[in-house]
Image (cartoon, rainbow, N blue to C red; front, side, top):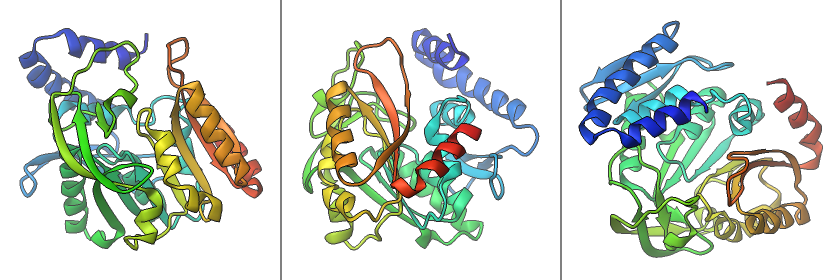
Length: 310
């Protein structure tokens, strides 16, 4: 069992007050020890939050992210720690990234890292209000440090096959750092045997990837990451015009279930994309989940070399 999953299991069985107070202090100490060379963790009074700055391989400088819970702090500590994480490798490998779509952004780590590495513009799409607030505070902090806030678009919405209002189902306590969220269809959320019941629902907008540009004028992406926990088939259905256009150089898509995997692979390969690599998250568990990287054929060899050498 990895340290990551051991820590997660411990945090679930401890009393709430231990989880919130003691584990937060433990992760602050762990962060400072792990990133003692180039890492900082400071209180920012403007946004009433901790701001963690940690170095990344090939980063221009340390990446700063707002931290509002021990789970958000744990996430930045563990980000990139698994040597098999092909999305993390892909984020470092991509070239010529002008505009990055972070679909299912959570607190925005992939999008902020892409900006840190490549100075790309980023559009975050996320239905969960506490995560949106973390992203907004993060953009504010970066702007105070001289980063152009116009480099970021923040879309408080689910992502679906068509644009419409619907409910976001929070299968968790509504606070920063949680990620057990489903838009429109709570049964689409992959539980892997766990039992969740909606704690809170909130009506939010759901937007299709195609409408982001065609209806609302958001710049077309050159690279796209999708992580929506079982909802990705509907997200891809709402991106068919973009996929057919070939404008995106490469995609990183988390895909859950053999049915979704087959359907999405058929869409991507029939529209000129090729699979670069895939990584299975939880081998042996039901509802197999993969991160799959797709690229244009002319970039296949480059990406294979880049991911293999990372």
